[in-house]
Image (tube, rainbow, N blue to C red; front, side, top):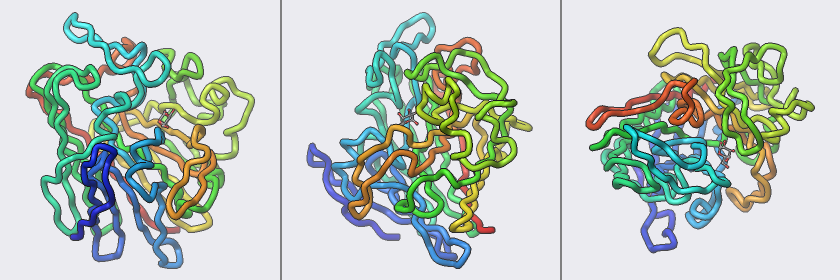
Length: 347
Ligand code: GLA
């Protein structure tokens, strides 16, 4: 149940790291800045613990970089076209931080601020954040709670709860970059990925706003229905991969029902670590760290592109503006709730 001072933000706010763990030794270190996962120790096939998430050694890097390593992204993850949304005929201008678009809710969103700790036990921590009306342009005084919990079967669950005093939009995610061989072990090309999705949402251009179509993955580099190495097709001469400089796309999940179910699996042959992803979300963004280059990570490690992958569960990108997609709207006082579970085992 420990809590240690990690550093200070540029405005002098203290940032603390907290750990949660189970009796098997699986452990997560999570900080209150962005409710961010900093370290995640899971056992490999020899029983040795590896830290499988990318991170930085100081708060300054987390503040400065735009990689979103480990952060909770909200209220709205991914892109919103022209940084504008319309709710009940009222247009809201959001912060622009990705050309003319809004990405991950803007530069000063909850991923870049200190959260409050509501509860902390040996295996669970609950962070809370208040996003005032019109912060980054989003309507409503929002209160968001994110609960991280590790159980005895090596699953880390992330439960999101949001509520606002006005009709608004919530579409939250966690932006951890995983490398199941350990954060310092190079590219993730050899990781074998399965995603239960027969469709994905192609984008219009390198700015990555979806066209609105759900395209079939059949016969494309986006077909992960049968596991294949992430690196197998990543550099194919395929327009969507050229736009994203690799995978940076949302998959339309083949969900059986509305509840939480397994929709992805990743296996790293070298460590033997398998990660199972379960969620109640309808979409998942696969991002292969294409734009990461030159960041100084943990212990001074110089990161290169594609040394981590993100599987960000969410509504489809720009779904608030795209009539073909399920639109995430939450009424005043209504709870937004979603759960994603990252489970670890070996084979
Ligand atoms: C997301 C986006 C990427 C990139 C990263 C952060 O996953 O889809 O394009 O912006 O966040 O660097």
